Amino acid sequence: MPPPFGVYMTAGKVLKSAIAINRFKDSMQVEIEKKCKGIRQRDVAKTLGISQPRVSVLLNGANADSFSTDSLLSYCYVLDINVSVLINDKAALKLNAQ
Image 1 (spheres, rainbow, N blue to C red):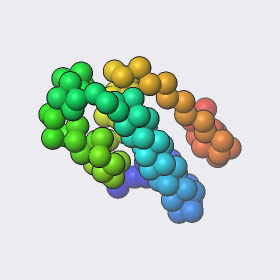
Image 2 (tube, rainbow, N blue to C red):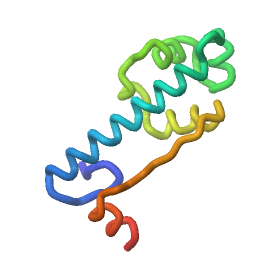
Image 3 (cartoon, one colour):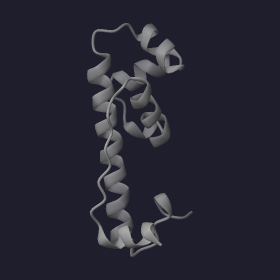
C-alpha cells in the first residue's frame, strides 16, 4: 500500500507524514467538538448528514482514525470551520510542484 498522499520518500519521512496527518485529523475533531458544544447530537447529525450514534463517536473524543480525513474536512466545511494546511517539508513541496 502506498504511503499517504502519494508521498514516496524514506521511511522516516513517511512516518513523519503519517504523524502529521493524524495530528491534523485530531485538530479538526477538536474544532468540530468546540463548534458543536451545547447543540443536540440529533441536530448535529441532521446538519452533517450522519447518524446520531456516529455524531456521539465524533463528539465524545473517539480516536480521529474512526473518521476519514475527507469526512472531517467535509464536516468542517458544513460547520463553517476554517481549515488551513501548511506543508513545510521541502521534499514534499518538490513532489507536489512536479
